Length: 415
Image (cartoon, rainbow, N blue to C red):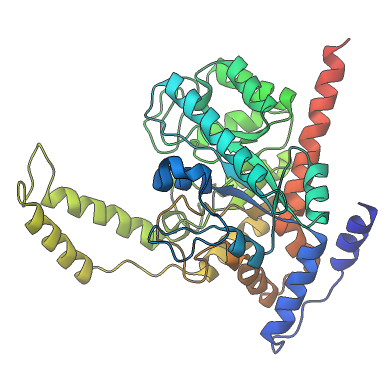
């Protein structure tokens, strides 16, 4: 650990290279950074993608190379290695539309799947719950595997369920997903609580007591503010971007970024095009509206009852209105904006791979591409030390801080 701290401290002094530096110089610098600091992604939906696409075969599918499969995957072991991934929060998402008890049951199955993957490939993955676990796994050449429960509805309004998830290794809880729940408002649903209820505040404090990170991706801005006001530990946004660049309610405003800075938390930038490009966000809404205009059973539409004609007319609309291009450089813009407003100590990576379909920014199609994004930031003048913070150093700091809060709360509880 002492060697890691020394490397991080000294690398921060590296002077940005001249613009004429060759691409292989950046590749060498990225490799050097990622040997010393684990690259940690805050959000990958691979377990759910395997469940959805493989069914019962998910327990036995060969995960070494899925690149040639007809079902498009962003993740497999070969590409994780190529991307020099050192740590991953695997999302154990289930649909927010399910009844609460079904959400709990399916969450347990998803946690079991993550543990099964680690057990099947012990030379590749290692379960991790603490920052030290992550560092040890990385030092052994394995990918530290953490678990993120992506939706407060998945605890079914029961703190005992939350405690059970923590005992099974959950590293964070996203307070809501796409739906407003009984105790917190979502960013993408009608608000009911003007933020969080008293029970929601109890959830946040229980997460602090358990050492489980509070994840504010997907929640409304008022929920973000309420959680930041009550939490005793730094928070994360496991997969969110900057609202100043793309005015999506899933993203984080500059005002909240400053609160995250004061809290000591980290915003992990999402690659999903609707959260990266404001032009794409508008196009996506127009595309959905056109589908409804053509065919909206049972209420009607221009092509109602004529699915072939609706498909043909929609294809013609797409030809006349192609999706705006979204690029790696735009993702880098979000990273830089968050670093500018909140500080370089408060930004990370949260790709949302295997959770956003086939549409990803050019240059960021799968888990092999992390080094390309880090190299882009180096080309923009980022030092090795700051790239190390982005890649994983900031998340490790937040994890350690949460562990310290857990220890303090335990000590107070014993008096």
